[in-house]
Length: 408
Image (tube, rainbow, N blue to C red; front, side):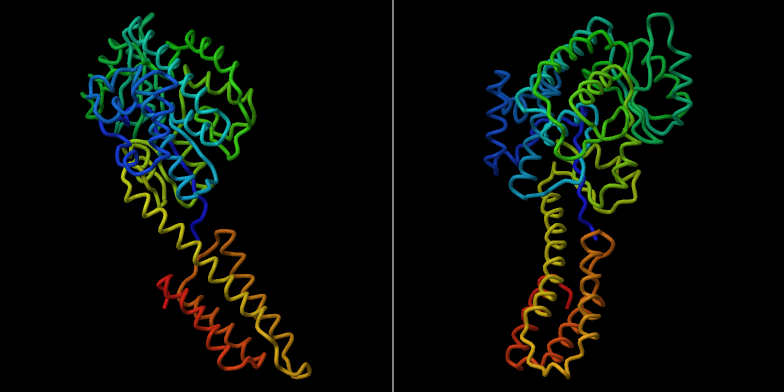
């Protein structure tokens, strides 16, 4: 039975003009989020996200704050309007700030200011060092590492910055080295995408800047996360304030391991929902994980699908609860000496067993199980010699919910 929901948040490269607009038009909580962000940073996020144009949006100083704000706005819809409760959260690079905010570890205002500082610091280094990032697809990771080492010389270098999957890595470094690496990738029939207006995230080029980031993080009010947030760096849940500061600083200049994070998510969730523009993480997750239920909120119809699945669970839990209710609450009109106490107890235990498996995520209600539950209720009502009219009403209530679940 699907009931453990992981929420994930994207990083740079997911942006596009118009991101979040369908949610902005429909939900007040989204409009309030954009308004709040605009006031905090004195930027018009509605204009940047919806009609600012590609050039303005892709400026580093606008890019990451815009993705962060859009991701938080979508998450607020998911949690506040649709009442999803996550089993865990994770974010890719920048998305880690979104995950920590949604978990209650970071305050929105402080996190937004940190994201802005992180962007400004990265921009300065990108300009000074003439550095950026690129995506490489379809090459063995060891081979990419070899090419990076071979092309790096002296003060110019590049590294794998993000281990996204067995088929995809992001490299980060000086642009002259990136160009040389990508030329070799091309010769070896690999695929690559140069990231526009990017900065050398997750590389030692940003180590000095990470010290300034630490200074700001240490002034923030940071709480233990309400839900587990899986760290990109050490691939385990953040534990406390010091842990959060340490690993947010480290991920600025050291590689992150999204592929390993996905392995953790696979053990902790049955459904994954991506909150943020585009469907970058959803695509990687679908390609790498054996999960059918992966949704991207970039399209509102995906939210509807996820909600339908949630209601399916809700109705199934209610169905078992309804059966238990009619077994327990129906009047016993049978003479005590004739009532099959042991058999009735066994029947009740069978229903409790089904209920427990549902709650533990170890199975769902199939047509056979639903039929079995109804037969148990029928048997108990007959054993109690419930009046025909009352029995009819009780069974009809059960069948009405079956119809809602489309298990008739």
